[in-house]
Amino acid sequence: MNREERIKNGMLYFCDDEAWVSRQVAQMDLLYEYNHTHPTDMARRREILEQFLGCAGEHLYLEPPFHANWGMNTYFGKNCYANFNLTLVDDGEIRIGDNVMFAPNVVISTTGHPIQPSLRKQVAQFSIPVTIGNNVWVGANVSIMPGVSIGDNSVIGAGSVVTRDIPANVVAMGTPCRVVREIGEHDREYYFRDRKIDPEMLALIEE
Image 1 (spheres, rainbow, N blue to C red):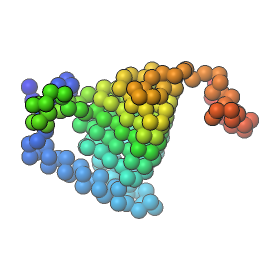
Image 2: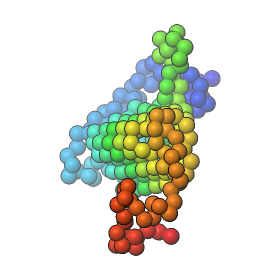
Image 3: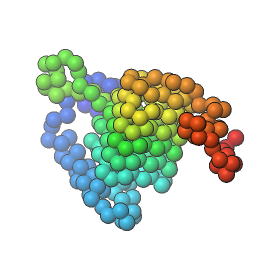
Image 4: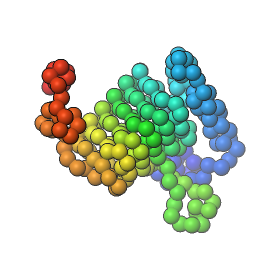
């Protein structure tokens, strides 16, 4: 079984041959260029993202510095935003829906290493895809681990470590991340603690 098949099946593999490293270095050159663009050069940023990523949806904005192992294995939907230091360990696929927001210092990792010391000494690794649905908000300093799926509309609280799937339409937080509550009527009235949504903003809430 070749490496690509092993990756696709979530099996252990090695990635230390010259051709593999050369492909990654070419991607790192693009990433370096992106992170050193001027803030006003949005056209160039867009051009680089379209080369670097598997898919760069319409109106994608990634605040530099942005980090990724490959880039080409990550697929963004439209209207996504990431604040400083989004880090993608995308040896496996990362699929991100539309209207997703990432606060600073979020890590999404598809990849890990075996606990068995002798395999780890040889730098064996595995990659399991991560999927994030539409309209998800991921708070600051969140880590999303291999194989995780996060459902539409959910919110992941700051500092969480997401080790298992999170369903749609919930608020989840903690280490490990757990569902705290469903998103419901309370959230149509309040936006933060005891702070009420003003009438002008209420009029914008979709039924």
